Length: 316
Image (cartoon, rainbow, N blue to C red; front, side, top):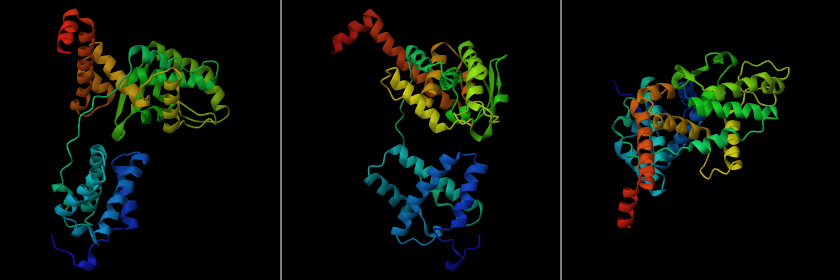
């Protein structure tokens, strides 16, 4: 490829390039506005670093400069997961610049992400899950709505973005199924049990009618103004209900997704079935829940089997 002169090299900050990059994230990579905003925030921190280093063009970025950027993050005690996320934002950005021929070569091709410590997902016990979904006050339309979405989150393992994106036409109470559009706008069908179906029926029969009023909306879950409920409100409500029923761990919508997967595997479900229900592209992503089940099985074994307890006592 023919090298450009210094005058032709792209500047570090181009409003047009950043706007194009944001459209690329949201339209082509199907990232949510929230995730795209985080990518741009991480990118701005990197651009500030380049300015401090006296770098005036992305074509001047090399492997050594990226290593200095990583070293700076480490010196600032940035956690590994955050460093990996920032590198992901940079890879995406330079991939976009390269594709648009705004740079001659992609410096991120030689960058290595830090190895992350694998943490097992947290989950609720069956008793905790029951207390959580039964927390809403069913005498109010908000309570009927909240009971319905809590039951659905636990019954089908939905992401919060998938939950709030549901339309009335996506739900079938007759077949107890819901059509979901997940990451990358991939469509899949999820299932719900009888408790979730009954909670949904009560919400649609009474709660949603009162909340929506005269407002016409295709959204399944609506707020008190009849508009589609937001992810933020769902997150706040789930957290509040967790505190209300005395669950010690941090409760959030994704915790119910973890709980859904773990309880299915505990019950003997096939791993590939769980993968399909969760909408995971890679089986390895789902396999982490087998480690959770194995870890839980070990805890139960050590606390319940008389010889296991004797062995533990001798070690202590």
